[in-house]
Length: 288
Length: 230
Image 1: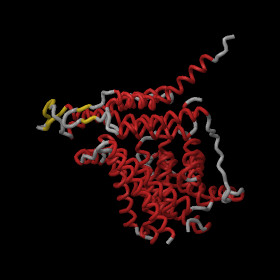
Image 2: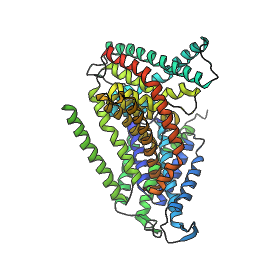
Image 3: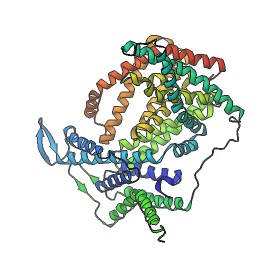
Image 4: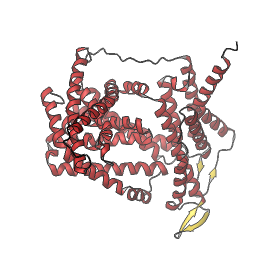
């Protein structure tokens, strides 16, 4: 089973822990691990193309931070009579790396959680919400198609000048107005059909394709063990990192290594999962 | 009375969860504005979703809300002829005005979620869900006594919601890049996004003036004909 084929429950647990731990830490080792894993996971699992654009974001955040924040002991130079410090620069780059890591994880979330999984999660929060969600997703292409039809009908009546701005406005508003009537009238029909098929009955169940398998149990168990380890070590103040007034790093003993290993394991889970699957696929090809 | 009770219940749950998030962030490190604000935005959506789950039972209402969401998302596509003009906020306000608070919040928040499925999810999705949802909710709450029937108040409310949307998204930008809240940096971001904000507010007012009457008439007709959202 590839990463995106796992059960939504184990996936949501993974994403929540990866994003939450990335957001609450300022430790450079953890941030770099999260950034690297997020980048690789996006590059290999979702085949993201424009990932490098975010490096500019890191640079911008890193360079603008010392302009606004003048804490820190090591003064590099003075800009408009204000101190430009090394600590503020490092802090800026680290917070840039952190927000970009969070964005990477959200990107992977958006790729992995397509309509069906998102619908499953929303259905757990509120079943009616998931009905609204899935119906809206179906109506969007329908509305677009109807809009195109109405537009073509209006154009063929030649009643609007398409090249003037006021003509454009009039045309578009007419199309939209007709579209609203059409969609809502159709919606009432759809609703009546739903009702006659027993939508408003109490004992309604939702169809879901997902089954919880052994692989999900393993995946979830590793995530939970990592979560417990990371929470314990972060809570006990190991590997805390202070940027101001001067950089102070307390995390270079054995306990901190356990923390780093657990975090690396957590962030690399999607990669490890897909990599072992690829290996299994490669070695089970028939040699005959 | 029941409505007030559920609001008090969900409000206390909200305060509790918020306190939990803040204390968690204090335990881990000194300041975690990003984590807390994301949790707060996510948590603030929950009472509205539960209220929707409880109050809306009619299949017609559910389908009409789904259609309004689809119209909001596809609105960008339909108004492609006129660049920079997106009718999303105006449509959310109109939905809230005529279909009430629950429908307004649902349309706003799900529009944010679904349109970000096309344009890319990020931490901003959660904030957009909360802000657009609250705009729809506020429109519904204000129009309960027919307040927004007044043209001037409607324009004021639209401008205000546009400004608030822009300011809150700037708060998100400040917090996400910095993890703390620095007022100078926030002001710099607001200044930077001022032209976009003005364009946004002006286009919203044009849309609400152009769409409120024709679309509102249609929604009102549906509402009275089928007895929806009473």
